[in-house]
Length: 253
Ligand SMILES: CSCCC(=O)C(=O)COP(=O)(O)O
Ligand SMILES: [Mg+2]
Image 1 (tube, helix red, strand yellow):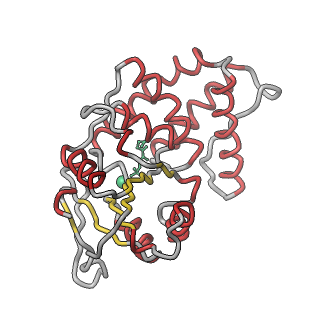
Image 2: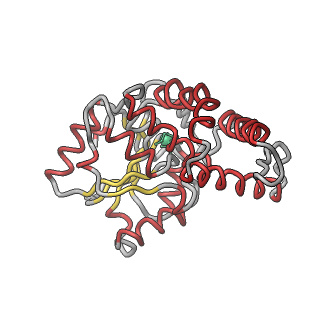
């Protein structure tokens, strides 16, 4: 690996166990949804999130996604029918684990209540904190790029089992900069950070081979992170992935 002065980190499967996301964060949304909709119905912030979900559902239908759940507006339907449609829409998107900005920002908005009440506390791998300290001591900048919304990312690092880690992080990116599966998104991040002429000065760590390949194509250095509970990598000869550096802890870098 060549020297790097910026790291870009995925969250789920990389800094945080997939199990925390699927066994704690996602059930928090599905189990509390009905009550949350009733409690927050008159909040303008809440209605802003619902409007994003409504617009996304219309785009989904336009794009031929036949099982998309349309959310009517107040002129078209009564409150109970709208709430049922929102519930069905969110449950459908979460079953499919969609990495769509409207869903992700709604989830982040709901998780805030869970972190504030103490019901949620995130899990960050031990080596991540040690690596954060080492990188900071070496003057290396730390950025996050996750499908989770920026708000949700900040909550994960602020309310972790290792304490508030936000002070280590120089900035956050979510899919509003582009899909994690497209090289252009990584170039956009380099542009934002003013390192477009030297993308190889950045190291991207993720558990997802398709994200790693997209970042590599943009000229960024990469390593794939294999954590307990992540799906097996199965890099067979001929897959084209044999040369990708596999790590099990950030301290191997
Ligand atoms: C950071 S919010 C919780 C995780 C989440 O919803 C998600 O989609 C994370 O995906 P990642 O890109 O970090 O693998
Ligand atoms: Mg991930």
